[in-house]
Length: 52
Image (cartoon, rainbow, N blue to C red):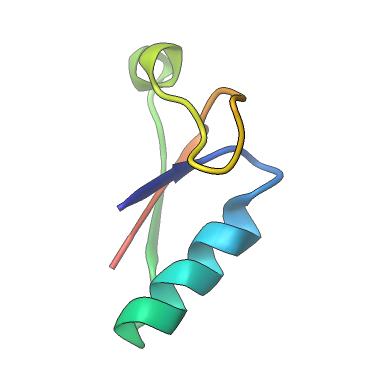
């Protein structure tokens, strides 16, 4: 599972597809989840959860 910002969602999708060879499930984080979660690729606030 990857948490990512809007800028890095493409990278998260590619990582899931490359690793699992499955289309990813993309969920938008709630306001509460956004407060404590940062992007895997940078230090910005995460907006999405990308999972297999």
